[in-house]
Image (tube, rainbow, N blue to C red; front, side, top):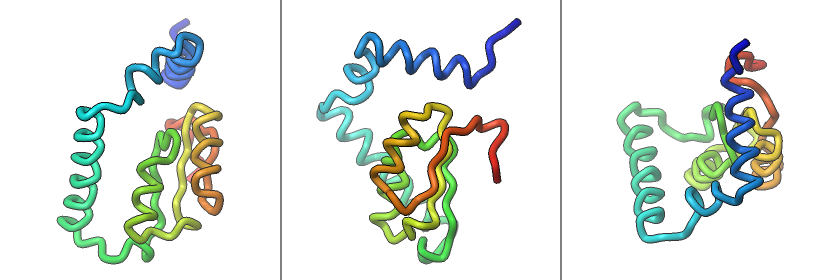
Length: 117
């Protein structure tokens, strides 16, 4: 029987936690990581402007696979309403981390193929 995608993701993150490798590879503060983060934030603003979404506070926002909530936290800094952000993630610890960052948001452990929306 083949492993489901959500099980595969959980196994990868379990390995990251056990080896510390995820932190070393993905979260090491470097000039390159800072550049990539800034590029992503600029692209988010560009896409929002291109689609004329107006005030973010007028919208509910769903980020599937929200991880630690960094993108939603950034959107709140741009004017999104914390109570209107939703972030399912297949890794419960990451959804919990996002909930701590944005306590009024709605975060939960959920499989993207079976979202409660």
